[in-house]
Amino acid sequence: MSETEILEFIAGIKNGKMSEQDALKYLKNYPFNDIGCAKIDTQRALRNGAGEVIYGAGKTDDEILRIAEAIGARGQNILITRTNERVFERLREIFPQANFNARGSVISVKFQEQLLTKSYIAIVSAGTADGAVVEEAYEMARFLGNDARKFSDAGVAGLHRLIANLEQIRGAKVVIAVAGMEGALASVLAGLVSVPVIAVPTSVGYGASFGGLAALLAMLNSCANGVSVVNIDNGFGAAYNASLINHL
Image 1 (cartoon, rainbow, N blue to C red):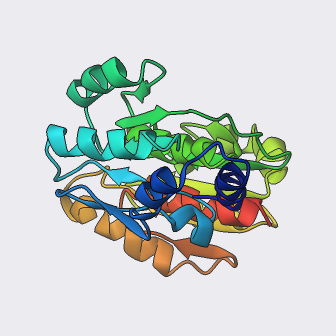
Image 2 (cartoon, rainbow, N blue to C red):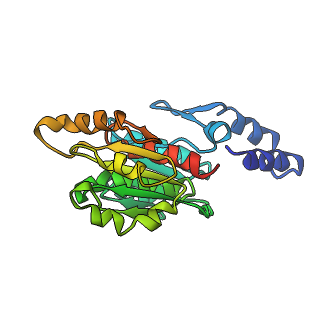
Image 3 (cartoon, rainbow, N blue to C red):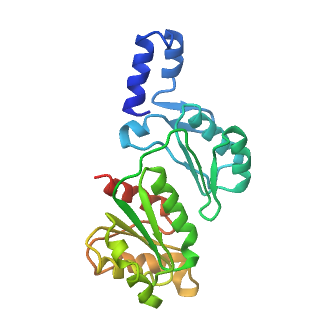
């Protein structure tokens, strides 16, 4: 619940649009709404500036739908990560405006459109195979009200591809670097731009890449200034932190 929603709630009681009993019923769900399978953090937007996001992995389809329906019942925007088309097909029966990014495995439902920031986040990926992580980061960044721009397949195996987009990348307020294999892209980018670089190692690779561990360690050991690192395949976390920077 945002500050604006709280003020509207108070005004509703004051002008008689909401009865005392309805107000009591509404307030019983604070500071969280216990729906049995989950305790929804209804005040997260008030504390952190962004509402709760549903992490779909490990949850049943029914659990995801129940949580989403409870969030949507309050008119709050919904974002579900690590989910699937089955959930999407069922969810859009409840919320027809639902959208599904199949590559990123992300579902979004918007009740209120957000104005995008004038500054933007550049999401630069090393290879096409990193696309799932890129799309998760992109959807999250847009969900949080950011202008986000993707620069794909610009890894170190062909630096001319990166240089071709360098002017636009340098115009960003913050850069997300997504790379698997040896994870060199983050260090290269940090040496070329004057803004923070958030590095996302991906599990793309084989053998000694150890499911993204090689890229993670390379990024953590970067000698370039301004690099911070999130966990393997964590496009969500990278986008959230990039959004905080972009809104400063």
